[in-house]
Length: 148
Image (cartoon, rainbow, N blue to C red; front, side):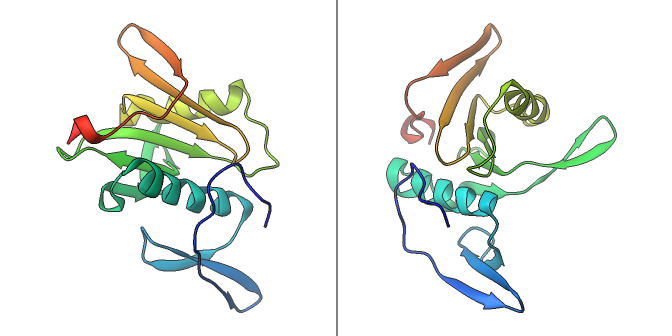
C-alpha cells in the first residue's frame, strides 16, 4: 500500500481467500484492504494516538438517509454526550480532493450535524469548523479535551 502523509501505526493484515484484509480496531474485525480503507485505518489511529480521540467514541460507516437514499459516512467521532463531533470523509490516495468531495461531505453533515469536518485522501487533509454563520477552514485538528 502507498505511503501516506499520516503517522504509521502497527497494523495486522491477513489474506482471506484472494483478498488481503486489515484488522479494524473500531469494528473489531478484519475488513478488505482497499486504498480507501488504508486511509481510513490511518485516520482512526492518527485521531486516537495523535489527538487523544477515544476509539470507543468512533463509528465507521454508519448509515445515513439522504433524499430517500441510504449513504454511509466513513467515520464519525462523537463527544461524551453522544453528539457528533467530527465527520470524516476518506478517499483513496489516487482520488483528488475537489469541491465535489467537499460537497459530498457537507451533504452527509447536513444530516449528522457535526461541528467539525475532516476530508482526506491520506496525502492531503482539510479540516473545517461548521457554525450557523458559515464554514471556516482550520489549520489544525480540533481538540476533544474540552468537549469531554
